Length: 165
Image (cartoon, rainbow, N blue to C red; front, top):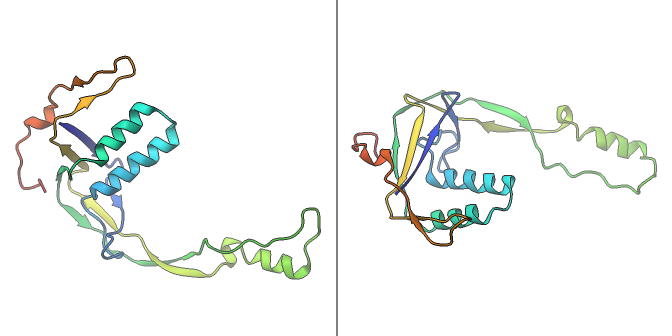
């Protein structure tokens, strides 16, 4: 068994539901957690043991999840500058023309067109979320090439209740 505990330090979660971008996603989808772990792996380096752990986790069935209820904050539409404006090209060392300078000024955030966006927020009643995979696992260490059994996690002693999904 392995468990991952997440605590929302600010007491809220800003993530949109993939089916409805105006609603917050609560509880967090296990795929969102996996993407965060993968991003952390690529940010931190190239550790073979961590890579194997991610590959193992990827092959597991969906975890059991404990997450409390949440209150959804009212979602408002805001207008933000688009980030996909194409930069202008010119030869290195050449001076831009007046038209190029004017077009370049249009790339500044205050001059870009704005698109409507929603930033839905869920405010959980308990800022903790637990994901629990119940498969028997082994742990690889750099020092040893054999598998070692991980001791039972105290989270396994929790009794499922209304928050278990």
